[in-house]
Length: 111
Image (cartoon, rainbow, N blue to C red; front, side, top):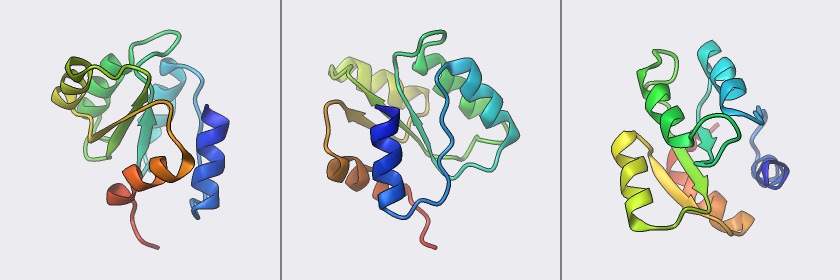
């Protein structure tokens, strides 16, 4: 899924995509800062994406960065919890590259 999203983003003109296989790896990247957008799954192998989005909102380097949850968890309660914790948007799998890019468009900075 990460490869699919990477190809979609790169085909839409995103110059740099940084991937993380785990929540801990994502935290290490986010602590360095410099990200314009974060795509985050709810289900990660080591941390809940919900825990991670809450932590991201407390980091000075990412407090204002849009966080888009990309997940199989499609219940309204899941969406509401993610948004309450600081997610900017919530995209439910499966999705097409076009629908993902459409969901991300409000958060993309024009070059």
